Length: 247
Image 1 (cartoon, rainbow, N blue to C red):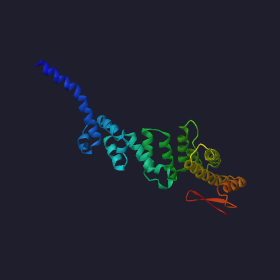
Image 2: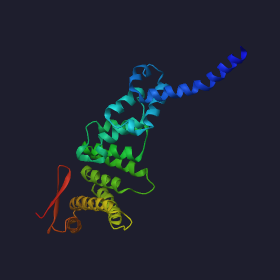
Image 3: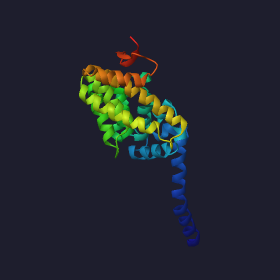
Image 4: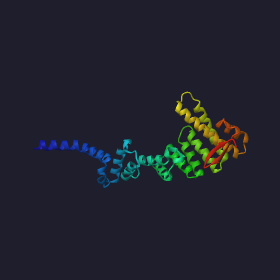
């Protein structure tokens, strides 16, 4: 009898952790268990949420993000996803109105260059240029060396905030980085095309900044390099973007 009791105890000791792991994974990936899962202590729900996000394939849609946040309202992974999606991955023309809230929360839970950059783009899209310039500057501080995307955002925002000398310095730095990258033989063709596109944007914004700073020669040179087919070339700001023409 004692032998059977001992054997049962050994089985229980060995199997209990395995059963717990199986239950944990079931709760993480099988949504019908959510009603039960939500009654568990917050620390257990947070563990289940962490298991669920360990496989990014299970957190691809807003509905899946919502589920993770029901399990763990402080999940950095889910808030990061919300931020990046709402900020349209840096495409200012497509940023959603709630991007500032989502990215501020993501940055609070997990400060990073990317979260800060997306928060800055959301602020810029909302027209809060002075704050955006500061946030882009903070994003740039995360890296050991300056990043052209951060510098370009700093320059755009500084120009629209009225900080013209700062805008010129930041845009010139971004221009130099993009020029170097666009002529680097080690970069592949698609990347080179992106760098050339960014370089053109740098020069268009510099045309605006030089003009505002009463530097017509530098403005004309920047514009002609951005648009070699336009002579003479000038740029104006329309809907928060440079529009260049021969007029």
